[in-house]
Length: 102
Ligand code: SF4
Ligand code: SF4
Image (cartoon, rainbow, N blue to C red; front, side, top):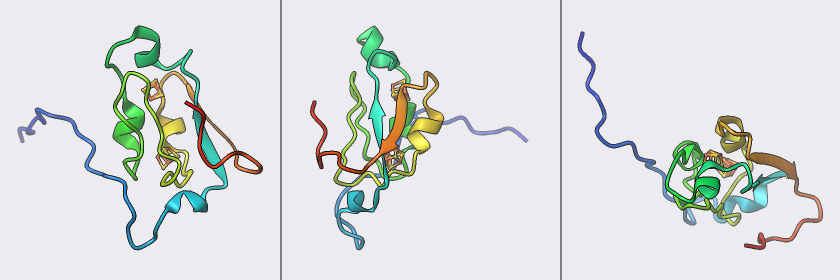
């Protein structure tokens, strides 16, 4: 059977306050991106963005330097698992500020 090919790859999730509210408070680990290893940040052009594609909550932006919205990131770690360059690591949430410095 012939398979249809997707012409456009897109992330369907969008983040926002749902029934569960601001889900960032659920997190026990936080994803941190090392831009020295992140492909789009290194090449200064749109590339990869698998973290944006795979994040089930749609909280990663599709920018040259991807940003993570920590108000809604639940800390599941899928982005870190899927990142091909291991640019994302999960660190313990204890004592970290609520928002990331950009
Ligand atoms: S998956 Fe990794 S390398 Fe790709 S854009 Fe995200 S952080 Fe960068
Ligand atoms: S840890 Fe999970 S929710 Fe947070 S940015 Fe990564 S994939 Fe999305």
